[in-house]
Length: 317
Image (cartoon, rainbow, N blue to C red; front, side, top):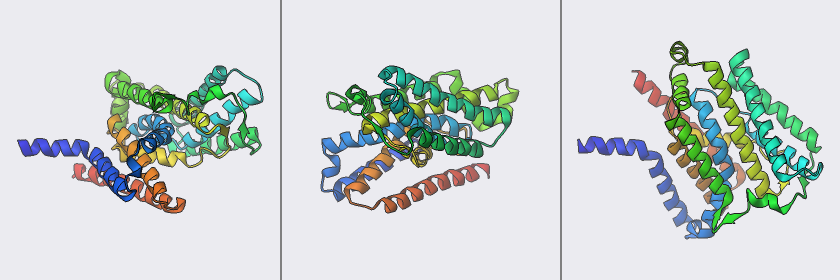
């Protein structure tokens, strides 16, 4: 009985064990630099924006979907929010609200293409990615937009004591995401649809409406990630979100959310975010080239998805 409990414990917390091992390796390889307070704070800033975006992606993957438009939404929010503040002289808070509403509406558009029209999520969100990447470039003209009020640094550069505000925002978002999954009936719907969409429909769940909600939430969280990133960088770039959807998907899948849908926990996604953030930071400290980092992250994603698929096959036999 004791061995069985230990096996279950290790199975449930294996991802956290991987994180601890990774920290030990990088701490030893960097001569202790990795664990300095300044570097830990730096990691928390680095992971904040794709940690926030990963919450919406978790919901999407739980229903066996995908959202490739996240990177473009982050870019568009950067450009639009900066443009409203700098070129239109708009109040910071109004600009933020408009940008978040825009991000949410893009999510609703994705939901419409997937749920109502029936376009596969991969194609629908890839189309959105392409469209809004182009829109971002057209608005900015391919030039950086900077010069907004220093008060906007609240979201990405300010701290409460030694804790960055962006890390606090990420923690609050994870708590909200966990509440939705574990304490609300919407969370039960997400798991039911991912487990068996037809059965969920027959049980009375309005699947299409839930898909609208999920993609809208994905857009909203991506938009919030874009605000944090803009605040941290202090300049809007028309390519800032390019490829970020890859990091976000890797965090979610590595955290144990099944690409087949219906399986996953928010706590695992937190661990996935920390692992990818620490991996990136550790490789930078060790002066690993950007292209080598891409190779390593690609391998991590392939291994994570491979383990998920093998686990699914084992359960089916």
